[in-house]
Image (cartoon, rainbow, N blue to C red):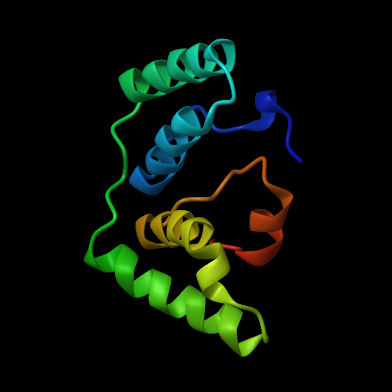
Amino acid sequence: MREVAELPDEAAISAATLGELHFGLHLARDDEVRHARLRRLTEIEARFDPLPVDAPVARAYGMLAHVVATQGRKPRRRAMDLLVAATAHAHGVTLYTRDPRTSKDSRTT
């Protein structure tokens, strides 16, 4: 995993990732966790204009899901991860993630 200092100066976020962060806010087990997640989400939304899930992303998703399926795995279980990877692929950017399953399953550049 790369250190924060090794990450590029410019960054973006997928609309799919924002959706997952909003979902996580609603799943918070208590008010303290919910407030911490809300603070983080508010900062992220103020900093980034999300990359949309649009037609090019849909095409990339179809291709990535097909690759996962042909490897004998179930793409529907990883649909959100694949949407995030497809967003990076469609926009020609490198995907950085803290989720080791995602980085193993979806090389995007």
